[in-house]
Length: 176
Image (cartoon, rainbow, N blue to C red; front, side, top):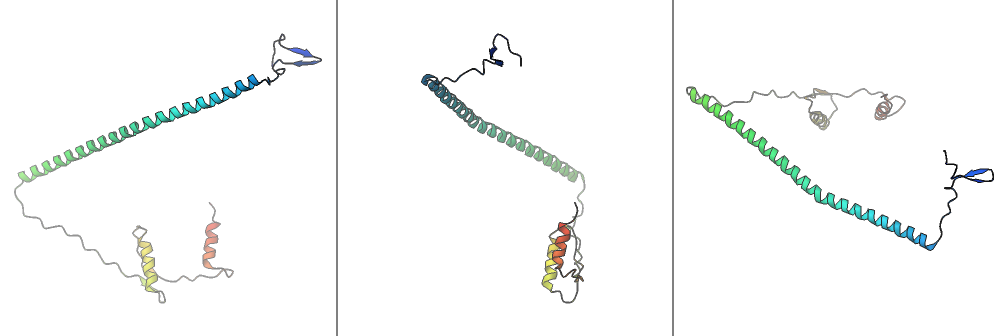
């Protein structure tokens, strides 16, 4: 830093800045002034924050109600457009019907026959409850999969560990 040489005081061989030579005033008047000004500043900022939050509290409900009204107007316009389209479609259908000669009445539509699902092939020794639980779990997946057979797997105990523990170990140590 460069100092004006007029403001630098030489004390022995050291150069001292006048800022470093300031001494705190310990008088009661100075202390009182600092305390009162500090309290005044804190209270002033607190009042300012209260005012800001009150303004937000007054403004935000108005903005919220305006946005809800705008959404309601958009929904009304959308419903009106949809009703106009349906009216136009109904008018077009009625015009087509009025121009055509009366035709034979059409029989009511029937759903195509659905083939009954085949029962799954179940290995001997597996209860019907287990098969039902497996079929329900597969049906819950909404993938269109069907249980065709249920059979036991030949699981070999590797090192005397439970197969579920082995599966957890493989799953938890699988690389990313």
